[in-house]
Image 1 (tube, rainbow, N blue to C red):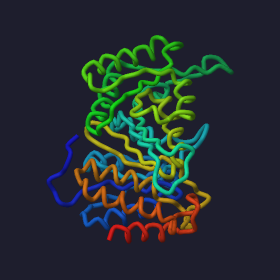
Image 2: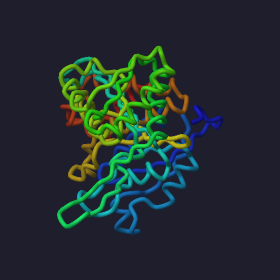
Image 3: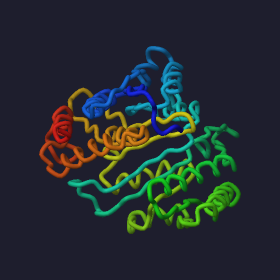
Length: 340
């Protein structure tokens, strides 16, 4: 993807989502605009309310907007469990070919965690594996789901992980797998990772079985740097590493492809606190910081990040989930104030 636009105004698709989504998105917009940068927000609706009104949770206009603008900032969208409409999140990734999900997780100042020095990036393949959604009833009481792994997708995600490591000064890649059991599918994934690793001799490369990986993460997470893996493992492990640094409410995320990037909260829509001014916008804000860096606005990204960390250190205006009493609006104003 191109690194920085020539225009001084950045057109960004804005997808508020469900529940607390509009609150955390609006809060993030306030902070990003306080940098002095100019944004043209193209607001698009998706999610449960849209489904109830239009019969689709992801209208074509949303996809068209992201294709046009290349960048999107997205709030959480509710996905029904065990029935209902197909996940708009998965559909958006498929339609835009957002093949890589990148989830950094690092300890933040002022937030108590079991380990003080976690700094991990999970790179998750986004386009296939069991998330291909190919399943059927064989006979009553027996369901078959197909795990799809392709050489093209494995090589692509492996290369992305290694190039990410080089660009961000990372030193090691861990390929996570279960090739001892799934010898063909996960075996292909490992073979592709090994092939790409030979092009990057300065990056240490290792392989680790997924169950051992989980054990190592909750005992010695400091040993990991960049981790690359298939879709299902990535979905689980990315949440695990978020838990090591304070939870889903403080970690950013991006789904990225060759022509588009969707920055989003990875937490749920929390309908029980929607509209009450209790939501913590940090996850979307961290995603917004990632977006600023992708746009090439590194100085603005540093200003926002430093201000956010200052508010965390002071612990005077943090939201309830972080042990404080601040409302969403008070938290946002504290961050903006720290940017002055």
